[in-house]
Amino acid sequence: MWNRSNSQNKAQVVYFSHGGGPLPILGDVSHMAMVEFMRQLPSRLKRPEAILVISAHWEEENATLLGAETPAMVYDYYGFPDEAYQITYSAPGSPDLAKRISGLLNQNNIPARIDPQRGFDHGLFIPLKLMYPQADIPAIQLSLLRGLDPRTHLSLGAGLRELMHEKILVIGSGFSFHNMQAFSWHGANTPDAANDEFQNWLIEVCAGPLSPSEREQRLVDWQEAPSARYCHPREEHLLPLHVCLGMANKAATMIFDDYILGKRGLAFLW
Image 1 (spheres, one colour):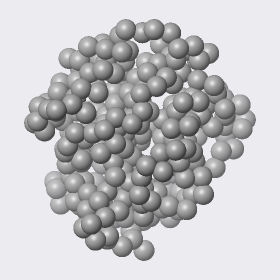
Image 2: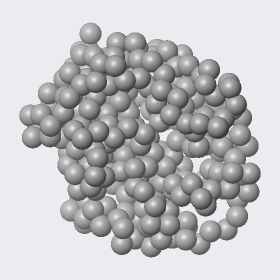
Image 3: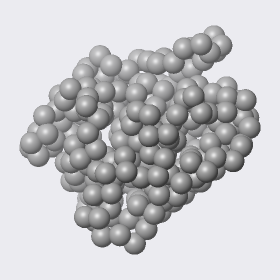
Image 4: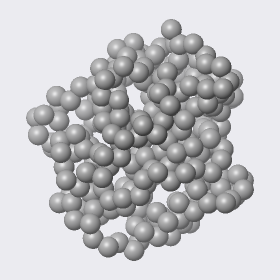
């Protein structure tokens, strides 16, 4: 049963780059920095009572919560060795928390529903297997919204702000660079000025001394950032950041800036 924590137990909100499919678990050398970061991240956090993941790999017409008691595995990648399809993560779900968050969103005029059948996709099970390998913390997912509108996803995050008073870890699981054609699948870290331009812009917007309204407007207009569409031909891996920032409503601390698949990837903590 999910119990509301007292107001002294503040939520922790993280956006990070979750890597290429199952490669972090399979020992890919281009993920070494990310894997070490993920393994060490819990030492920087208070142990949460539950984990809510906004995954880049789930889009629905309305905000949808994973409501299974024992979520199955969704292997939403292809072309990898057989062992990639044997990865398991046995954390329990939390139907009670899913129901409460769904109700909270509906109260904030954000249509929400619960999917009692969907399982964990790799936006959840890859990072959490590194962070909390004991799989003993209840975990659920929240979908993105079809249409991928940035303001809508900031509003989705704002609809979750009541959770800031609870001992919960909210993870935006995406990738601050996600151009599949530009990744170095052999792991070479080659200079990329366009990648750097956009990553530096993200650092300025998320962690810089901006007013909340200016920060939000820049994320609404993210396509105007330097090299925006080079770094995100499609924005589903960026929008979990919008949800996180909309929820936290303050400047972030950058906690990771290193290479993944040969490109700079970032992580932020609120």
